[in-house]
Each structure stands twice: as structure tokens, then as C-alpha cells.
Image (tube, rainbow, N blue to C red):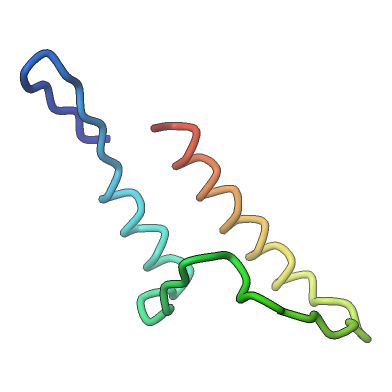
Amino acid sequence: MHIRHKDSKIYLNQSAYLQKVIECFNLKNAKPAPTPLPEGYQPSPVTENASAILHSKYQQAIGSLLYLMLGT
């Protein structure tokens, strides 16, 4: 975590950690979105279970982002 003090304010920055998360989960080419899902999104039913590896990777990614959010 990068901490900077200026004019009686403290600024926290975790961009280095976020960059590591982006690289770890191969998200360098991910497209930004203004909202989590587009307006009018209709999910399709899932007919099969996700593999244990994919499930674990998803949990790791969410955990990393939660750590970032809570740590700042």
C-alpha cells in the first residue's frame, strides 16, 4: 500500500496490488464496464456445473478484490 500525506490529508493507493491481481487472473485485456451488467441483461440457465478449478479461480479473484476494497 502506498501512503501519502499532503496538506493535512492522507492518500491511500493500492494500484500495485491491483496490477498484480489483474496479471494473476489474466485480465489485462478485460473491457471496462460502467455497471456490473448491461441494462436489460437476461441470464441464460446453466445446464452444467463449473469445474472445481474454475470455481476456485473465481473465489480467489473475488477474495482478492474484497481484500483490496477492505484494505483501503
